[in-house]
Image 1 (cartoon, rainbow, N blue to C red):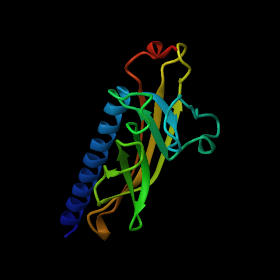
Image 2: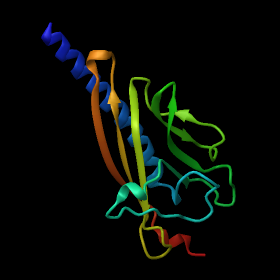
Image 3: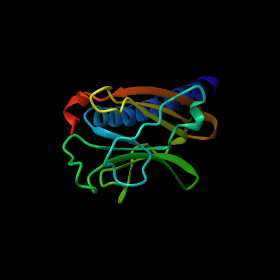
Length: 168
């Protein structure tokens, strides 16, 4: 009985890590080729906006990021990508919008409860810095009441294309 319980917990952990890994990989690939990063998802992205991590990072983080994707046009306000945490039925999810927030799709599975998504953006000064995004994702994964496991993931993504070509 205890081996079966341990096996279920290992499977739940593997499912969670595979799903979170796939979501982070998708986000990372898209962000690496993106530009004009904006900390937050309010208005359409027209200029980069930073929210750098400092000695008190909880004060500066955002639960959402918006940016111009690889083939996007900065003058088109409806083609920006956005990632955010949302709560659906009491369960936290990571969602993606390819339409500047007009429609959203879930990236994480129903077994994943994302309790926290924090995003910091830095290095957005044109012709001086290389933009980067740091994300922290916390949550739990569960396939049942006895198989819940927590996770904490942090990753930093840098823009692949140098910031030099964005000089006005």
